[in-house]
Amino acid sequence: MNRKWMIVVMILLLIIESTVMPWIIPAEWRMRIIPHFVFVIVLFYAVYTTRYLALVMGLIFGLLHDVIHYGNMIGVYSFSMGICGYLIGKVFGEKRLGIGWMIVVTILGSWMFDSIIYLIYTMFKVNHMSYDWALAYQIIPSSFLQLLFALIVYVPVRKVLDQEFRPKLEED
Image 1 (cartoon, rainbow, N blue to C red):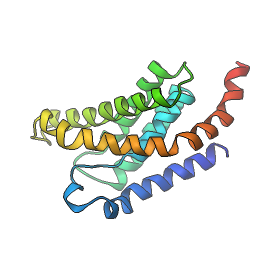
Image 2 (image 1 turned 90 degrees about the vertical axis):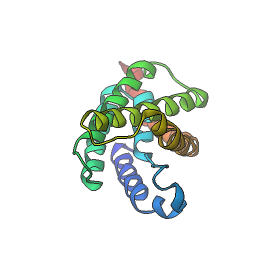
Image 3 (image 1 turned 60 degrees about the vertical axis):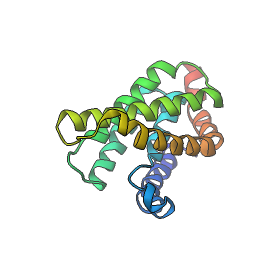
């Protein structure tokens, strides 16, 4: 599977998190649990490829998310996904991480991603809730959904990214 197929999978994940997940998530939890499956794949790119590729994938798919889910501002998800992918790649990218560290990366990345979105919306006075409320009722439940998804796709995604990028990194 090459990079083109991985992009197709990410587009399918974006469609799934937009169309299928609202049916699966119970009605009383829909405003609390927000799936970010594409962002989890960006985290895998950050850890198992290069931080620059994670930055580009985050910017592109974040902008796609902004356009599809047009909200109060365009570019918030693009900026947040790009910067989180880059920073996670900068911190964890040089090491070959196992599943335990990928759990930590997913939780940390999801917290950072949702916190940046919260801070941007608060800075532009779009959001009027406290950070404590957002952390308890939105960020933590969403992080558990991202963690569950990361655990489900860990083996196939790591295998694809290792096949695609490991020989190129070893040649350098």
